[in-house]
Image (cartoon, rainbow, N blue to C red; front, top):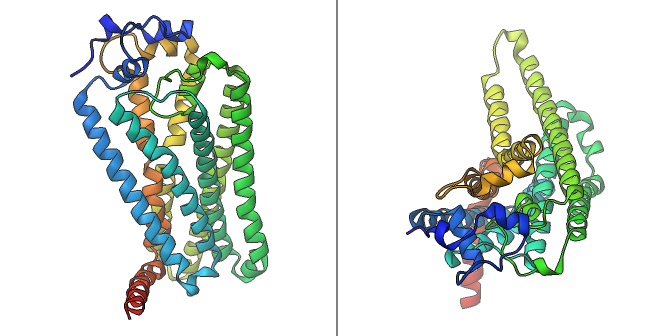
Length: 359
């Protein structure tokens, strides 16, 4: 049953302007804000089921793919599978930092309080999302080298350079996340600690609303995020366009169309866009905040009972953030025949170990 927000809760716009929750009589602040985002109890139950299913599925496929790769000596030396293991580790860290937080907020019927865990979770999310995008881009460039520069592939992509690339993806992601948190801390006030934010997760819009729209944080986050995302899209597009050209040139003398290569390129490009949906959604909302202005967008957060555009966008973003960890191991790992063949060997190895222990 929805809470009667008009009688018990002040408008969120008033809350944002005053940054004070002391006027809420006899009702927990976080619960009031939670009800403004999810006014339907049915929607809350449905979201709990959706998030639990997505998280369990993500953990299952990621752990299976990681164990399969780790126990296979045939795959351990290949650069693409080394990059895949890095991608899986990033996804696992993202799942473990996001999933329990969101489910806890849904079960407790309250938004996430601002504090140490909020900032840690924001830091980890930013780092993992950037690391995932960079790793997927590196995987596309690795395929380009493998297909289009096959003669020089092993000479260019040595083990030392591969580990350097992986280290740089984490270093760049760590640097961007650290700068974001430091700029966020500059607008930090002791009075805000412990107060409920306006979301179930400390994503950028939620924190910026809670801290009174610090301009330096917003500018750096939007510019760095947009620039890096566009560079990754261009690199990914270049890699698979050149791969398709090579495949097409191989069959041109026979006056045929390489349909398999075209379908493969279309598949990976469509999956890449699906993985970028959370980032693209953030770019769109960031553009709206800039074009419409802070006051106009803030008024959308809660100006009428029931579902609000900002609340719906927030829930959509949380769901979309769980999608990449679900599909990454399927696309780049379990879809690969070599990885699938390693899983039965892993099961056999575990059974052999259990028998040895019993004996």
